[in-house]
Length: 497
Image 1 (cartoon, rainbow, N blue to C red):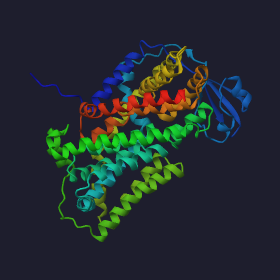
Image 2 (image 1 turned 135 degrees about the vertical axis):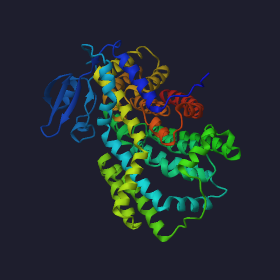
Image 3 (image 1 turned 90 degrees about the vertical axis):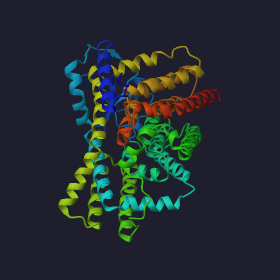
Image 4 (image 1 turned 180 degrees about the vertical axis):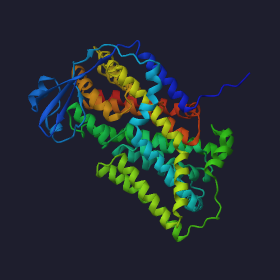
């Protein structure tokens, strides 16, 4: 009998895409009308599926459409995406997605995700250059000696720093760059690759789940709900602190077990393959020379510049990709790598992450199927009608689960916010709670599901290490359950205070 082997991430996503395509044959097609602001002409553009109408850019227009958002949120650019119009859902002619659309979806997804795919490939290129210089091995050897006996500090530092990035500016896709760099460091500390994956991915997930100043979730969702983004900020800070602490303790508990007995590792059978792939050397073959220190400084500055640009200069994937390209060239010059050799190493490094890039494209293809099949808004419409007549404790927890479920179909945090908040936030008024509770339920629901969501970043992250999705679920599900119970209790307490 042939033993069962869990499918690869690519296969998992294609199975999900097939299931979603099948749903489009049974779930009614429908769409909410949307409203966007044209700043050059000072008018609103109302879109009813294929028809558009120009409306005066006034507060009266918003009031007439029952959109409880101050006009200045649109005029000053706080809300730049089309928002859903309450009570505007209309059932449309079905657009079932057949075999041809299913086959096309990964290609369309790759085209739509080209910006992040190029970022991933260029990150692979610069990592290839770094590996060639020997700077990584020298830096890892130095760090291993420095942290000897206190390796747990590595888990704390990485998780906290990435969580800070997640809560402040939505550090998520950018973490793809950290895996090939940090995994060898964790291996040198006698941990397994799962500890590195957890510190990075869980750090990002808990940070974005408990976003405080993140413009792509907290701020845009609060604006779309018609409230100030600082409303409810204290409760989110408390949630961030406790959630991050729970995650760190969970990771350290697992890491210490693996350190004492490597056979306790969930991925123990992959130990040799992973160490061969990423290296596990603490030798001094590469001394940390002045040149290698300079290379490491340039490499580190790439991330500093990227984070500053994203958080302060409104940079996005094109600018981030440019930073890594310039960084690779500077490192090549410092290391005195010949031009033809530089190109060869860069391309080989990019090819190492090609599988990850394809996974990102296939995942985006699932969203393409849902959008083309017109079922995303139908899911939202039925979800919003499920909460009629609930008391506020049950209501807010229902919203948590609704947002978790919707995030499978709408994985974009900003897209979810502008589409759902004008529709969901008025429901808070009917049960007598503040609209900030809906913003919190949106963040926590999306954030908790992101720990395991196959349509999010986890499959791409696992593909870098070639760890199975089943192994990740086995590792992370107890933590998700702990966080879910605490989140439900915290939301319930908040609405009754």
